[in-house]
Image (tube, rainbow, N blue to C red; front, side, top):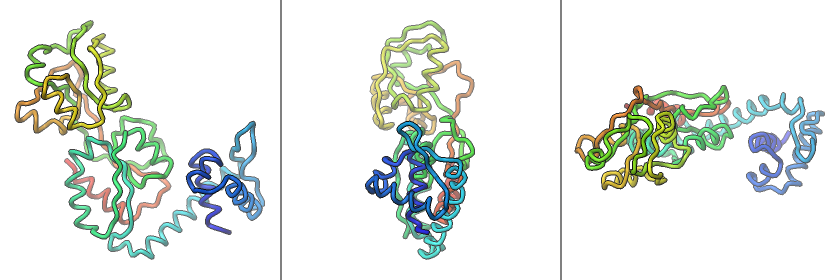
Amino acid sequence: MELKYLYTFQTIVEEGSFSKAAEKLNYTQSTITFQIGQLEQELSAKLFEKIGRRMVLTKAGEQLIPYVNDVLNSVERMHCFESDLSSYQGSLHIGVGETLLCYKLPSVLKDFCKRAPKARLFLHSMNCYDIRNELLRGTLDLGLFYEEVGGLGSNLTIHPFGSYPVVLVASPDIKAQYPDFITPNQQISIPFIINEPTCIFRQIFEQYLRDKSIVLDHTIELWSIPTIKNLVRNNVGITFLPRFSVEEELKLGSLVEIPTDMSNPCITAVCGKHANKWQSPLMELFVELCTTIV
């Protein structure tokens, strides 16, 4: 039995269609169809059937998934053995939420590079929902994100490594102008400066505003946390971020906290992987170092 047929089967399941699997594997669709036909012939079982315009798994195909995952995980372990991973060689693809990447991960990366100098580390700054989805698809080895995205289920294994308060901050001048974010039914003529709509802490604060019937002037969407903080320091608007990302500015007084009615709002950071993915020594090292984050 050709291993590439198993990889093709796994990719179809992960991607959801023959065409997407062909695109990911850089095959023609006829090659995908041929390989699945060969696999079905060797197993004497129909793995996919056409319903409408879509190819969907048969019962036999569904039952085959854990067997294929076990075989390919074993192959991955063999490759790791051949690469002598006892000395932490190999590559690691990690998706990280930007606040964690900027303010919590540098010390971990410093230790990781010191202990695994031969490793190839690929970091991707990503939205937390995208990290969760890529882990479920198996395209990332590890993800560092906030568990408030939900939808983790039994397909992901997660290791919590910190619960962090989230705070509403502004410059001292803006706080003097707009100190009240507690009284309901207000219109406050100041913009909210924050990440895209799927940002976890944005969603928390916008729900608070809806509950309070507080309406802000408008929202400025930016990807860069340092840029958001710079604009807020310069009286452009307010923002709502994990305290660890504004700790230095709060100490210096260039940013100040504005009280809210939220009861100790916190977000929990986790390191996750697909439950079926074998955790290599390189992955184990990274997860171990994440537990040192404070």
